[in-house]
Structure formats: structure tokens, C-alpha cells
Length: 305
Image (cartoon, rainbow, N blue to C red; front, top):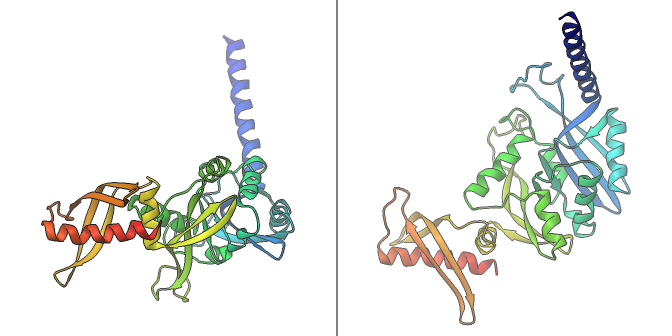
């Protein structure tokens, strides 16, 4: 009995010591919540939002206080830029928990797939990490959103809500790598920084980030930009969405309805679109109003071709 007790106690002590060792190791790492990568004149610039335990007040997260700090690094290669982030912060960069990656417009010249491949194979980024873009990726990391436990959460929630509404895609690192390897194009959501004059952010600038369309990744590089309406059409054409909310005019008044079971046929005779329509309260549309909604849906899909 004593022997079993001693062995159990030793095993428990080993587990406790191992746990302490892991905690110490994580404590020496910079856990990146979101990362922005810009490329200009042959130089990569990485802007990372790092979780800050000091900003959150220790082990207890306080959403009313700033819980992230921004650290940056530059280099002629992406790996060098990430290493320089580590030198700036004094901690090893830990990217496996990164919730969002933002690519800057410089990736028309720098390979998107090479960058994402390196982040996955060498930096252990998750294949499920969402990827988006902006003309100036670093600008997104400079916004201090008042919603969410950390500033990294708001842009991600914007993407997720837009995907549910069929407005914009939620594109993962795996989607970009897999589609590119298969010779396919893939669309990623595009953010812009705008002044909406409200208190979405913690400072007095009134600046916030909005989804205003998408860009295509084709041949491994950032390509054409699509506005919000065109992006909705792309979502339908790619099969990422089969239901969408439409705004249209009928009898001189603004109306809204939901288009569902959308079918698209790009045959020899041209584009054919069919769909069911219902009001938000579930009611059916009369035939004339249905034709008005169908015309808006048709134009939306046609704009993405």
C-alpha cells in the first residue's frame, strides 16, 4: 500500500512540475492575437497585436482595459521581419494562436502563397486562421476597438457576421493554400479604415474598420478588387452563399426581402437566375414585386462576372 501511495505521489508531483514548466515556457513567448503584413520596396513589415497580461490586470481579463500591445518588425524576408518583432518585444513569437491575418496591398508583388506557406510550416500558424486584406494592413492594428476582450476580436466578428449574411467570405489559410495549389482563385475579405464619428473605438478619432468588398488571390498574388455588391455576387457564384438579403425599390418605396434557394445557370443563352423570395416576416412577395427583387439579384450576380 505504501509503495502504491509513493508512486502515485511521485506521478502527481511530475505532472505538477511538468505543468509549471509549460507555463514558464508560454510566459516567455509573445502570444500574437492578430498580425498584419505589409510589403513595400522589397521590405516586409509585420505589425502584431500581442496579448498583454499586464494590460488585462494579471490573470483576470478586464475588458475595460487595453489587453493588447502592438509590436512591429521589418526585414527583407518575412521570417526576418518576424524575428525582428521578437527582438523588439524580447520574447519568442508564438503564432499558433493567431486569430486573424491581414495582408497589405503590397502582395500584388510579393507572393501570398509563399508567405502563408512559411507561416504554416515554420511559424505553426493554424490552417483555420482567417485571412483578410487591406490597402494598409497596419492601419487595422492601430484601431482600439471598445468591443471584445482584445482588440483582435472585433475585425474577426465583423467577418463572421458578414459570412452568415452572405455578404463576404470567411477565408481560411487552408482555403488559400489549397485553392492556389489546385490552380484556383480564392476571394478574401477587404477592410478599409473609415471615419464614422461614433465610439466604436477607444480613442477620439472616430475611426473604425469596415468590410467594403473583397480581393481575389490568383496565381499566388493579390489581384482584382471587388466592391461590396460584386462580392455578394461572387459569394453566390462560388457557392459560398445561397441566401441573401436584398434592398430594392418598388412602387417608389424602399423594400427589403430575403432571396433563398438561388440557382444560377451560365448557359449558352446567357445568365439565368432563379430564386425564392420572402419578406422578413416570412410573407410572400406579389409577382410584380418579386420581379423587381429578381432584377436586383440578377444585376448583383452579373456585376461579379
